[in-house]
Image 1 (tube, rainbow, N blue to C red):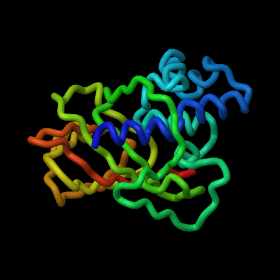
Image 2 (cartoon, one colour):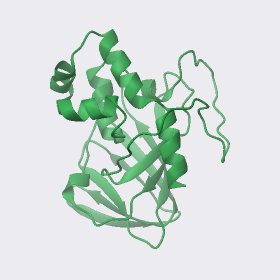
Image 3 (cartoon, rainbow, N blue to C red):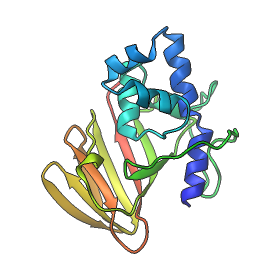
Length: 199
């Protein structure tokens, strides 16, 4: 499952989309770094597909480039009113060369409606990393999130609180507060997450 998610993320061409939009707006890496609060080296790694950015980082980039987060999950020319993604079907058919993957942020994600434009919400399938918690896994961004745990056990950190979620549990929260998660059970935790941001 993990390798399949990595491949599907590579196929989204996130780095290519960030670079293309940045260059289209005639921005330097340093200008984008200043606008987003992200480091120039991190942005370069994202653009060169050496790092897969967590959703919170993509939100900062989207805000800096003045686009919705949906921009990074759609293909050029996509304009449809529904999106069917079958369970074992890759939502995007394009191929890309494998790059170095990085899941330091504690999870990997696959968009579940990549072909829809101007979405009000962004649904994802998320697979959480089994690791010890550390505060570098905290993220915050505008909006709200809803997470429904499909499999495994998840330790959810929200500001000063720590909660354990089990398969079938769900949580809805303001994502402007620092939050993060780690898989703590025998198997990697998997969830459906829905993200809403204004824009």
